[in-house]
Image 1 (cartoon, rainbow over the protein chains, first blue to last red):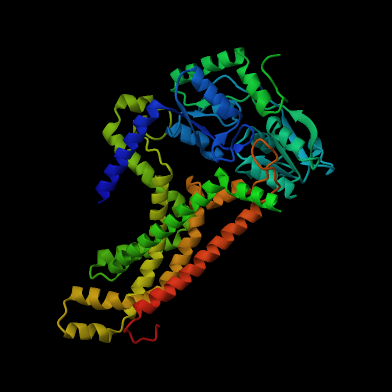
Image 2 (image 1 turned 90 degrees about the vertical axis):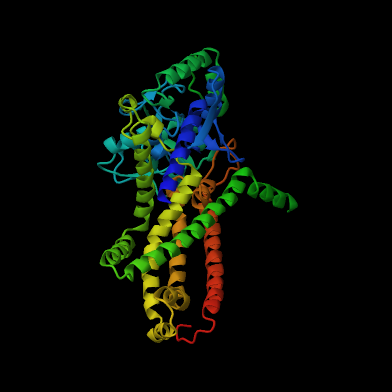
Length: 250
Length: 269
């Protein structure tokens, strides 16, 4: 019986391995609007889904989006569960040690502090505050390095959970990508506000791949170069980030 | 008023919510399959513990005492991962050539062809087996105790009628032990029901994960309905669901208890 289960498992594994060669599987988080989220129909949607489909159309490959939790998204890429990560992931030196990135498809974007309106938070002199971040992000590394000594850094599984706790008053401030926070603050009808200065971390957002996928990386890079040149990337940024930018053409 | 009703009806029946409703099947499947396995492992464990052979007795005792002591969350994370890597290692010994191993950049699996991709169905089965293993250890103890609670006189009478050891075990001892085991097993079942809320740990988009995602505040009209933090409303639905399951379970166990106790004169009823 045990042997039977193992053989069945092995066959299953081989089956999925051959399938993986036909379509390129792109992993996303599905909880980081407007980059990637699940729409009302329960399907992945957002800037990166549109862009990923545009890249695949340009490179003439078949792509499929799958949802994977943020904190296991790099390990599962290395294990081969999918081939590409497009999940608002900033290109950093730490990540480049384990995976490769395509050229960026979103320009370097400042990180911002957000707090409840009128709470009087000053990010340059944070002391004894509760600072929320999404775990495993560039902002989490920044907060750990610069703020953890005098404050409590609280790490969340998704950015939405951090926002929920800020709204509930469990956090004093959150540091996150400006492009994620800006529409949220704009839509909060005055309940949230930006505090302090912008912080520049990261080198823009790119698609992550395994280091041995040079061929796929070239395909993605070529397609991105073409899509940047013909304005498709900027058009999608304008569409999903409500005209705020930042853009590549300037 | 009717506009409001139409709005909420369409909101609660959009694709996201339908996926949430559909995800209840994962929870129910894990509980049912995990529960069945727990009883089977419990019977095996109790038989081992009652065995005439020392080795088997030791195995049964080790299983019931060690697995009961390990936190279910830990076992839940450990077992599927260990099983997956074990299978991948086995595949690797068959399909990986030295060149393929040298070309592999990640630490695991040994080569890319040996990767076993676990989707929701695979994880669901592994999760159920984990539940079965953990709660089977509790069931082992319950059934072991119940087997010993069957009055000795009953067994002696059966032997006096000329039944073989196997016949005594299956026709008298196991047949009568349910009356003593069921109260304990109903406890184990309740624990399994509670443990099904851990499914999201294994990348299964279960009811808890969806309640979390649907309830998270949304500020962007492009994403869907703009609303504040509604997580407690969705958790409330789960709350009601679990209470309902508890109520149904209690009713069912009462009925099974009545059936198992037919013709048995005993203080256990």
